[in-house]
Amino acid sequence: MDNLINTFDSALRTVFAEAMPSRSRPDNWVLEDTIPDNQKLKVAALMRINHVGEVCAQALYSGQAFTSRNPVIVEALKEAAAEETDHLAWCESRIHELGGRKSFLNPIWYIGSFALGVTTGAISDKWNLSFLAETEQQVSAHLSSHLKKLPVEDVKTRAIIEQMHIDETAHAKEAQDLGAVELPTPVKKMMKISSAIMTKTAYYF
Image (cartoon, rainbow, N blue to C red; front, side):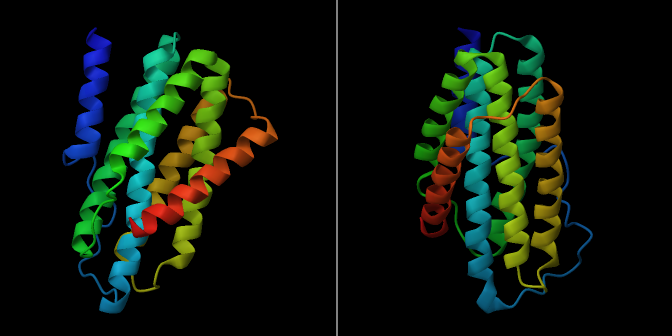
């Protein structure tokens, strides 16, 4: 029952409350925001996509931890979720600075990702870890593509995304060290298709 209550509380805080980071934003050393005004909403839309990705990550980890039977894996998921909370907060505050907004569909993104996490966690610990590793690898590639789309003047957003990329890569490696194996190609392709749909939708909504 305690696990169920904590899981529900985490969902409400992720979707509806302002995220509270444990680390300061990586761009604090940048004194001024020099991004051109005509680029701000475009960058805000990119950060909205990244914010949605973090909402999905929180939901996925929560679902996986809810059904995993391995305390080592559960602890690893909780540690990763803590860093993802930092990402969530960084993206949210940067979106507001740029004059943008979060996705209207965040509750839907959360529910879908949580269900997926519950399913993978219930199948087996190896599948759980493998899905986690592949997710983080795809997120890392996604963040790399965003770095190429940023205006050269936007040092603040770049600093945030670069640190997120470092963290996501570390999460993938940790999952591999714990025993993750490569997922079947059809599963990876399905994950990429789902990610592409989410990305295009979140850019506008």
